[in-house]
Image 1: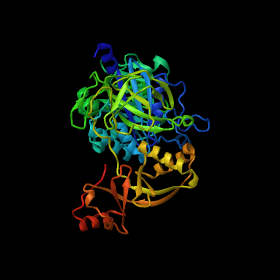
Image 2: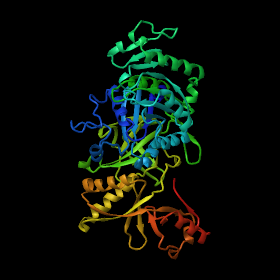
Image 3: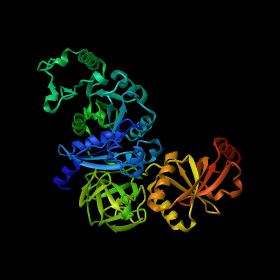
Image 4: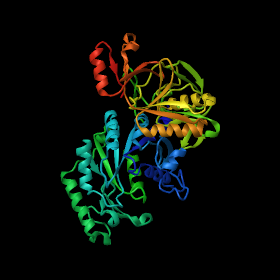
Amino acid sequence: MDQPLKNEIASRRTFAIISHPDAGKTTMTEKLLLFGGAIRDAGTVKGKKSGKFATSDWMEIEKQRGISVTSSVLQFDYDGKRVNILDTPGHEDFSEDTYRTLMAVDSAVMMVDSAKGIEPQTIKLFKVCRMRGIPIFTFMNKMDRMGKEPLELMEELEEVLGIESYAMNWPIGMGKEFTGIYDRHNRRVELARAEGDGRFLEIGEDGDLAEPNPIQDSSYYQQALEDILLLDEAGNSFDVERVRKGELTPVFFGSALTNFGVQTFLETYLQFAPEPQPRKTADDSEINPYDDEFTGFIFKIQANMNPAHRDRIAFVRIVSGEFDRGMQVTVPRIPKTFKVSQSTQFLADDRETVNTAVAGDIIGLYDTGNYQIGDTITGGKGRFAFEALPQFTPELFVRVSPKNVMKSKHFHKGILQLVQEGAIQYYKTLHTEEVILGAVGQLQFEVFEHRMKNEYNSEVNMEHIGSKVARWIENEGDVKESMTGPRSMLVKDRYDRLVFLFENDFALRWFQDKHTDIKLYSLL
């Protein structure tokens, strides 16, 4: 591989923003795009009356509700780096989409609402990052509102999440009295209500301001100095290697909504965030980003990003080498080779044709139904597969049928495409072949119903059959239909594997006690 291509790959920074709903994740994404020059005017999620919506919320239902339910891919250049942001769904019902997205990034930015601290969804997503050893950078958001004391937030990080932390900066006051941050890393004070370079005050070698300023006389500034003294003496020291291993999280304080501290965060993040990392294969070997052969994997499929064209886009994380439009790619699962003539990069639903891309980039390939989530793609004759993406065991189930039987074709086409996206799971009864859908959360069904009507012109009847305990079967040949009863049913999934749907845990245990020879298993 030649040096210019190596330099291109080394300049990539690909990350996801994770948080509990309403911690400011989408707002942060907007502000980062603003700094990258990708947008001129940040529309906030709250700005519905003005008709402004978040750039990363492109689906109609997202605009109506002000939540992200899909993973958007957003790209911009900043300070010599090519930044790929994956804006993940904030709503917990879409955690499966988020988990898959986390397989495609090299680091994560964790947004924490400073008034609420560490929330349940944050804990879940953090665990996935920890499991994969993903470096995490923390942004304590909403400092312009009254919230928990900064030291309490730092303690929470270590006690609740079990990760050590290092404060890159420290807030001076909070809420209405929030006057700025003491930037430990860059040795300067950044004023909250000042413009241009005048908002930065240099800190001298003795730790005091290099030039006198009224802020140093405030009690909030003095409190910040005392806290920093405590951090210097008793806190963790900054260690880039431990950050890269996911053992230490750099912490930044600020306010995404008022755009305070975001630029400082971005510049420091780009300085320490990892370049594209190797990826494991199913046989536990590794593919290096600087390998010559183009390889990648599909972590998301999205239908109807442009409803007028009924398109289907497969999102590919490039793992190694260089992609060229028009090249032949192989999908080892089939195995089949395709010429890629339509490829795109994204700013939410704004797309432009991409001719070349390198390891670390996310590209979209136009899909006519050949690709599946989790597919490995190679530019050569390699027949390996990257490690499998997580799939969840659904908990809620509905029986679905078309309201208008004359539109059965629309119904089945819509279900097929939305199931292939991975947001819902498909099952059918053994003889009557009734369609049953499974999901992790209720909102997934609402999005399904909305999209079937608006994108496939198919209104559906949905009969809720409640929560079930789904279990797959290792030794299918030993299963008989007579094993089912009033508390269980036997169905097939989209891959024609048999699945038991039990009424509850008691019914599952009863079945296992009675049929000890049947080996059951669940997904994640």
